[in-house]
Image (tube, rainbow, N blue to C red; front, side, top):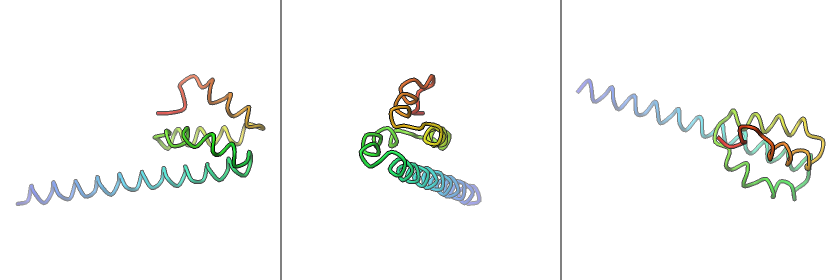
Length: 90
């Protein structure tokens, strides 16, 4: 019975951690949507929705957020996305 309890506790901890990470990613993604709309407008937000939804790690979300800060224009941001050596998703 001890092994079963340990396995259930590990599963529950893993499940909580996965939920925490997904919540963090959703929060970051939502913030990026707001920043894009504020800086570049709602049309650009719409154009980048699919791209942002494909971002799967907090690291890629952070990188994308840095680009929003660094790029003066939406065209510059789109070019940064296109020319990303490692791609933006992943």
